Image 1 (cartoon, rainbow, N blue to C red):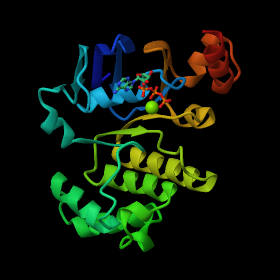
Image 2 (image 1 turned 30 degrees about the horizontal axis):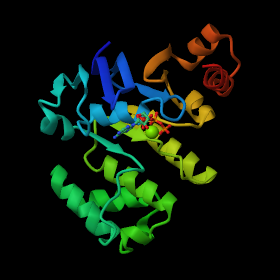
Image 3 (image 1 turned 45 degrees about the vertical axis):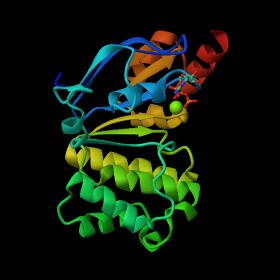
Length: 241
Ligand SMILES: Nc1ncnc2c1ncn2[C@@H]1O[C@H](COP(=O)(O)OP(=O)(O)OP(=O)(O)O)[C@@H](O)[C@H]1O
Ligand SMILES: [Mg+2]
């Protein structure tokens, strides 16, 4: 495997709480990896450390062969992310915000790129709207547009479909799959929608209390735990421990 991401013994302790507790995993180029687990399992914290937004208590992170946080700037030029917890300036318009990010990323022909992505995510008519006035589903889709501006080699998405209606969620899944296939992009994402995770992921990483309790293709994991669906497995794990 050609790992584009390699995490070793990654740990984050917040005031004595081991939010991420010594996890190790690799992700291959072109893989779709679903990170799942109960609220507070450590998913967002893990992604935040990989992106250099949080400093690990221990462990190492290699992204595209470079070390985080030592080579943070070079890494961030080639990856991207979206998260419902990272808001854009609300008093700028959608277009203004995207132009700022496109400039930061050094996007060639930013106007064209922005128009294409706004169209794909159904936001063309909102380009002159103030970002703070978007509905939550629109803001989520704007986050995806921003995340795709620099044609990232690895895209990290924290709950990309959480605020979307079923039709918009399906559209986002299809779009991400298409882009993933066209460009061989690697996708690492979190979701509480077990059907979605089962359908989309080549591999899942199941976190519980900061540790990886299961890893493999959805089918492998279900076989090992003798479960019919990820939803059942999830309920079993979350209720037992
Ligand atoms: N900055 C922080 N300071 C203190 N504790 C934190 C901080 N960030 C996260 N935590 C705690 O670390 C644990 C893991 O949080 P994290 O956000 O990674 O969970 P998660 O798996 O993303 O959960 P969810 O499904 O609810 O999004 C939680 O118990 C959370 O309260
Ligand atoms: Mg989270």
